[in-house]
Amino acid sequence: MFRTRIMMGMPISIEIADAHADEAAFDAAFAYFEYVDATFSPFKADSELTKINHGKIRPTEASADLQEIFALAEETKIETGGYFDIRTPRGEYDPSGIVKGWAIENVSQLLASRGFAHTYVDAGGDIRVRGLAGGVRPWRIGIQNPFNLQEVVKHVLVTDAGIATSGTYIRGDHIYNPRSNGKPADGIVSLTVVGPTIYDADRFATAAFAMGREGIRFIESLDDYEGYVIDTDGIATMTSHFAAYTDQPIRVAAVK
Image 1 (cartoon, one colour):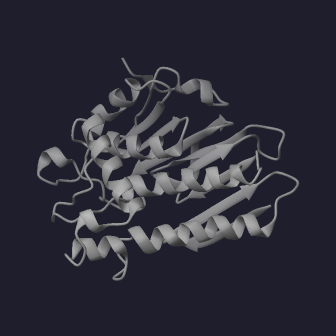
Image 2 (cartoon, helix red, strand yellow):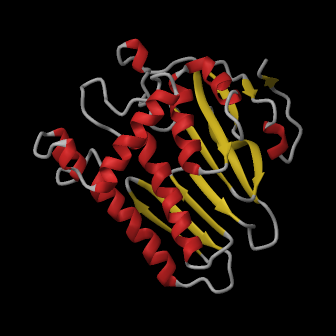
């Protein structure tokens, strides 16, 4: 069973390939995304995050989930040498670079807790899969060509993994380099990270994109994570073992 809804300003798609899939599972999953949007959206006037940004609630008074996100964001900031920061150039909080992956991972776990072994959760192109597509084969995920969105430049084959892509080709410049006084990241247009969870893949993809051309080296340094980056000249570079995920020959430079 496959369902898609427009939520959080983007399409969210869920597939449950188990024979006992039911509508109640989809309803529970989409309800969780609704909760996340209502809590963490920087665009909703009544979200808990907006109330904090407007000084109506102090961060120390925030809900347990919001405090967890603040703590995880600070942890990520330290792990990435300051390249991940949920404070915007205007000084407000925008945890979008960590919340989406966190929410996808939680929904994936929610479905697993209901006894589903073969699931696909996609929110705006960030994806968490478990088990097998159709219950019989690895999930095949395409990476878009940032210069031609109708074209897929690579496919990755995965079973239990998270796949996150950061880029400017759909939303424009929205990822900033915290080390450059809030200037947009430059030098690359798309960076995809594959790893064990979508939560980590998402936050590391965001941080690596902020690093620009050096971001792929950061992904190379992480255990169990692989990356594929396309720069502004249309040149692709991959980490050492990214090819293990693909189903086609790779003709790109490897990180050295």
